[in-house]
Structures are given as C-alpha cells and as structure tokens.
Image (cartoon, rainbow, N blue to C red):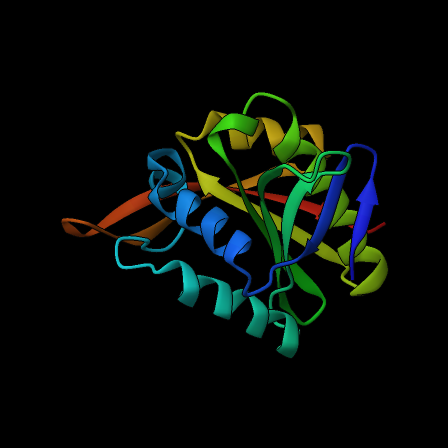
Length: 172
C-alpha cells in the first residue's frame, strides 16, 4: 500500500540499503531519541526495519516511510499501532525536513488512511508534555487534548516517570 498525497509519498518500509541508511540516521538523531516513546539506545537499524516489515505483515502496526513525492527525498516515518477499533499514531521527521510541515501532513494522511482502510473509530496521539511541536501537530490535525498521563519511562539512567499529553481524534 503506497499513498501519494500532495507533496508526500508514504510507502511501507523495506529491508533495502537505502531504508537502512534512513533508519540509521533516525536512530542516531538526538531529537528523535529525546522524544521517542521506547528506548532507542540499543536499537539497530536492520532490526528496526525488520520489525516495521513484520508489523505490516501481521497488521498490528502499519508503518510508512515518508518521502517527498517529487524528489523521493527521505523525510521521516509515520505508523499506526492498531488495537481493535482504536489506533495510536506515532512519527518522526529527519533533521533536514523539520519545520516544513512534514509531520503535520504525514499524520493527517496516515490518520485518514487508518480511518478509511483499517476501519478505526478512534485515533490517539501521545507525546511527552515538553514536546510542543507534537502538540501543534495534533491540534492542526483536529486531535483534541483529552488528558494528561503519567507513565514509567526507561531512559539511559533507569526508570523515571514522564508526563504525556493524550490527544484523541474520532472517525465521525
């Protein structure tokens, strides 16, 4: 399943050298590591890509590589974790693509796709409260801030508690 919407092209991740390079850049980017939900300290790009491919195969978490529709330039990643009729969208944008509206547009495209093709009734977007850019992405896509969550987080120094915003968007 590939989607071209305006200036973005979304496609499933593959195990190619090019995708491995993009994953390697992302997994080493300090801003992505700072805000990613889940530990990336021991992440390996090939294992990360293999998991994205497996997630497509079992339908649990379809993930898209996000690229410029004209040039093919790698821009980022967006995925939808599926749990019944609900999903949670997650994303990151490579450094050179930041500040260009890529995250907002990719989340919008993935959200519309998830409602139309996965039959979801609700989509959540969760981010650390300090991540103001993700708050803007959620708001620009019509997600309502529904509550504040406190969850354990395993960082480089062990477990700590982090506060998250939970934004919700309904299909209706």
